[in-house]
Length: 289
Image (cartoon, rainbow, N blue to C red; front, side, top):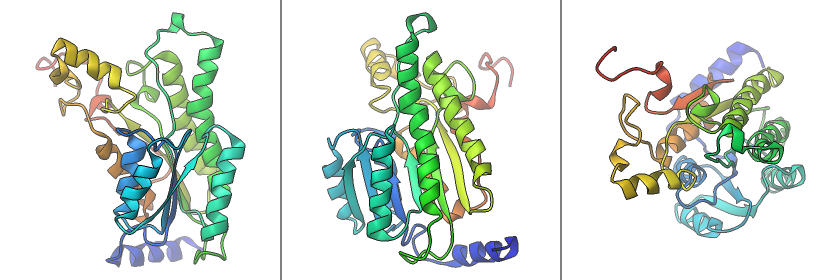
């Protein structure tokens, strides 16, 4: 398909009044946390009317409840226990989606962990564990989801296409927002999305990284709990120009946009959703704007 035909297809899509993910088959990893970005993302995708959403995490904890909540909106939702850093697990859920629904359109690689350790507290084991869970999981998503998204002829899919979104972090853009091994893993995620976008050139498969700032999730619970004990919760996020922390749905809505063809010309990007934190070098508020 040449560029003009693809542009016309996009224009026709944007004229439609139907939900932006209609008929799409979606997979979200790291969706089990009650207050996490993965859960919020699944709910945000559901609002856009896909055919089905697979919600996955290392265990089924909280996934059945999430699936029930989504199915109450009229969208099919299937919970699965998946180790996002295991080739066998990732390919199994992708193969199931393609077998049962004929296609794969959206893969949100959100699984990840974080620590607050300093460089001198880390060792080879902790470093490689972080890279496995955060970076290897993104690699497997980009590789195997992208291959599946090229399959056509079933499920009403007439052409190779899809959107892969990996959760990175502002910590992967520059230092100062996470521990060394966490920051390195998220920098790897960003680069995987950038290089992956070019590896899939001409396939209509887009790959982007989302880079949250300080978001109130289970992963950041220790920070918020400590601030609450000190009575300083209102200061969290004060260094960004929005002057507050974020909530999971604010990240999820951007991910859902990237998943749809409304974002059809966004590819290979690391999109910071951080209240503006990464927009500037450090400054003293009020001194230099």
